[in-house]
Image (cartoon, rainbow, N blue to C red; front, side, top):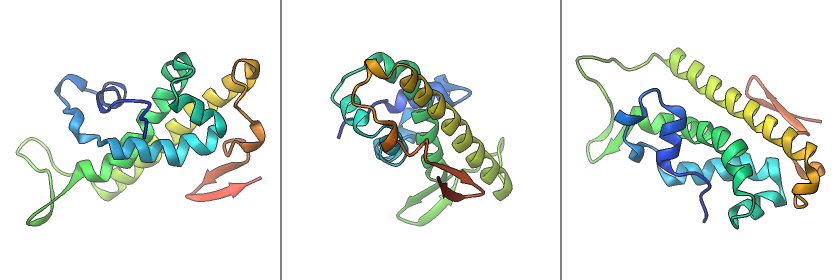
Length: 156
């Protein structure tokens, strides 16, 4: 499976201190899941063309930012809670404490909302330049036919 963004790029785009954040906290499986859950439904057949290496500027300029946010969103729980031979544990040190449930929920909603806004901007750009991207079909794009409100998917 082709990934459109590296873990290092996810860290560089989405973390405040990318130089001190280890890219290994973002597994490639989270990137693949983000691509399948969010990009494929939004882009339809154009997604396959992107995975084949077509339109690298579109990927770099419009799709890496929302994809990075979605990958971080899908990785947040694994970043906060680690599984090992002794079960689950949370990171804790003298300088930090675990975020509250409400802070984690707020952060997740914000990441998902920002990613969706950037993905909508990318789709608008694609639709404004549809001649450049013949694989794209607005009819097949989930972005134009659904929205999420309060965790509920609303289709139009």
